Amino acid sequence: MIGQLAQLGRAAALLIVFVPASLSSAATIVVPAGGDLHAALNNARPGDTITLARGETYVGNFTLPQKDAAQFITIRTAGADDVPENGRLTPDAALPLAKLRSPNSEPVIQTAPGAHHWRLMLLELQSTTSGNGSDEILALGTVSAAQSSLSLVPHDIVVDRCYIHGDHAVGTKRCVGLDSAATTVTGSYISDCKRIGQDAQAIAGFNGPGPFTITNNYLEGSGENIMFGGADPPIRDLVPGDIRITGNLISKPASWRTERWTVKNLVELKNARRVTISHNVIQFNWSGAQSGFGVLFTVRNQDGACPWCRVEDVVFENNILQHSGGGISILGFDDTHHNRQTRNITIRNNVLTDIDERNWGGNGYAFLLVGGARDIVIDHNTIVQEHAHGLVLADGPPVLGFSFTNNIARHNDYGIMGSDHSPGLDTISAYFPASEIIANVIADGVPARYPRGNRFPSSAELRAQFVSYESGDYRLLTSSPWKHAGTDGNDLGADTAVMRAGPPKDPRDPRPDR
Image (cartoon, rainbow, N blue to C red):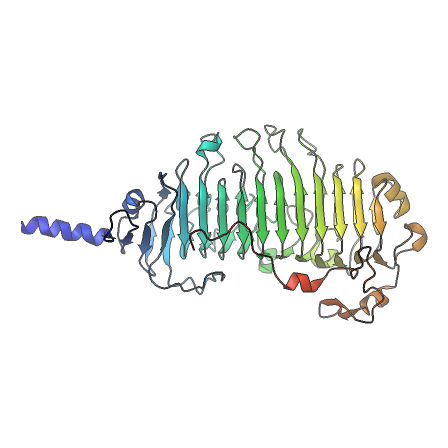
């Protein structure tokens, strides 16, 4: 009897379950230091909460199993929230959190086929420290052939205020894989997602349909900080869609410029539709493994098995894109494999600043359009390029449905320039037929080379229109003639007050059951 009691005591030390009076109600499952998290995940019922000990480390490769009911199971650090709801976690605030670490190159947390209604909250997820780090830290679904139908896609998953990071010395290939549906990543700090000789991402999605909400995070990746597409999805006709990327700081450490990590860009869409990218600060990108453009809308049928791949219905608005060797690059068609045309891209009310070839390499163009995309709107942007080849660079088939209105920029060397054509009207006729290019400020440009209805002040006159050009305050002075001078009656350039107001509430509530 005494031996049986001793065994019971040891078992209780590994897993403690608090069951409410009603057995049908949610329970709290306590997994103390050294406890069996695998068992807790398997035994948890919909609505339960699994709590992990503060500051303790749990080593393993843990799988979120599929459960039947549609109530969230929460895995979290025990105790009071160290970061308020709707706040953003920092590494310092994560010090007391429970830590889950992979012992190998496999994810520390992955999902079983069809797993759903899991919430990861106030946790630190770590890559292995050996070799090249983990290939993926948090794998929500998979891009492998094992996930070849929508019925196998995990869904209804929330990652809330988590610290997810590679090893500082060796990095990791991918911090979060979003091959899932109905997934939210919010308030998290995702860093040291870096590799040498390979692309690495903070967040990447290839084989999940969405919707995705990515809001109020710090995202750090050496290849692409955030990317959708780039691997052919095994699920036929799948295009990640209904994506909202809002209120994030998307950045690379400038110190990486003297290190060997493979650097490409900050945001890239290769297969995506119905995407809103708004109210983000997107910064620090330089010429490395690519030419230095910070944001890419570049449709790709990566390995030839995705002829349905597309980039369409994208709104890029109210962002600050800064400290980059180029601004935004748009590709109409993959130049290797057949795919759908990039179309319906709106770039509106952004500040692009320090887009500078001298500071960051590249060519310093604000916009690159190649391969014949269509229905491209660039409207009400303020563009600061002190050292650049020009403003818009074009190549390939013409861009039909091109609108460039109400922007403030400098001409620099070539302004609007296309391959084998002269700047201005010659390029516009060849690459942007029947376009709308009006009500722009193109400082230092030659009026005779551009359509009527635009303004061509000197660079000094341009600088004088802002509250403080030198310190980056790009509000127009109340006395500026560019106030209310837009085609819509609004001020020329970006409305920075709208940008400061932050993103509106997502109609898809990012925190279920609150």
